[in-house]
Image (tube, rainbow, N blue to C red):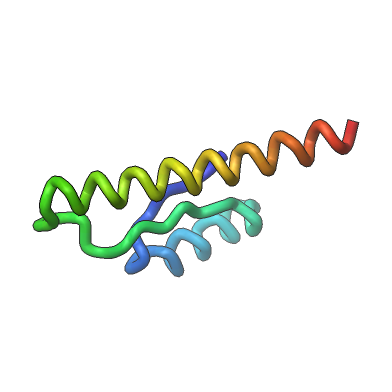
Length: 68
């Protein structure tokens, strides 16, 4: 599982994850704000967050395989 949030809400996201019993929940963080940005900038944000999410999920999957 990966949560995506902007840098402005990273602290809130980490706090909520702790409160929900998931202190190690990975966050894929993008710059803030998203609103008002050009299409090209938002596409760059999206590309970077997808790469980060894939890295997080790939790492988690390989750790589970290694544990077997």
